[in-house]
Length: 146
Ligand SMILES: [Cu+2]
Image (cartoon, rainbow, N blue to C red; front, side, top):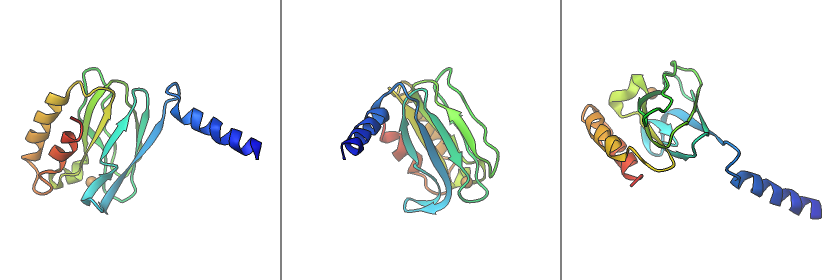
């Protein structure tokens, strides 16, 4: 019993220690509770140094960065393939699925302070004006970061 409590304490200590870079997964989906053609989670908070992997859970999706903070890694995933990205700068990242861009299939990652929030808000407006559906989606995602 003592061992079990100790293990639980050790495990919780490890999960809150920032020295360990975390790994996150974002699913590329045809639909979920949020709607059609959607990333899950659509807004993801990470720390600088963490890795985000995009998973082709449903077919005909990809992940391509649209806006990244200055000096940050950008990415260009291939259709139906997994891609991992190290989030190396703090700020807001916006990415899209190319086949479903006009459906509003976009997502947001943010790390640390949203240093480029104003730029991200402007980009969200510009990008959303091109969408044929889910026109409020990206603006709502970015609004969550204020
Ligand atoms: Cu897609």
